[in-house]
Image (cartoon, rainbow, N blue to C red; front, side, top):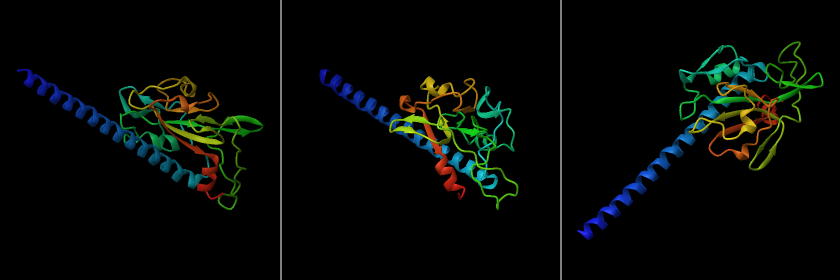
Length: 212
């Protein structure tokens, strides 16, 4: 009987270890899927920006649908962020919407939202286009590798728990259901995040991709 108990304990430990390992594999795959979603949304936004040469536009009251977190409310298909973030497939692996944090530009000498402002100046591309808007020095975030400046926008997943890991970037948004936030309202420190995933797009990358 004693030997049987030992065998059962060993079998139980093996099964438990296997279940833990399997959960870790599943979670790792979800992290990879979410990273893929972030890059797909980035590609969608850049595709639209290539035509307009402007920073992404969005509906100011764009929110996550309280009845279905994979969908949006108050979205308009002709807006860049709405079109790229609101389809059901544009969600993280845990079924929540990816969020968008807009950088800050300098307009008439003051920090201002970037949406609809020209990112590059190419008058041969569009007649009567306005000068490109410079990014504000305040348009920056902190990460594990230090400060990252000249941020154009950030794509953010709240991870498996669906909550903000730190208030420093939760305050970018007017409320927990808002899909669009702005660096005008916050100073994000992503080094304090535990399982949130983010993708930072800088002004340099925007200018390079748009052929500046």
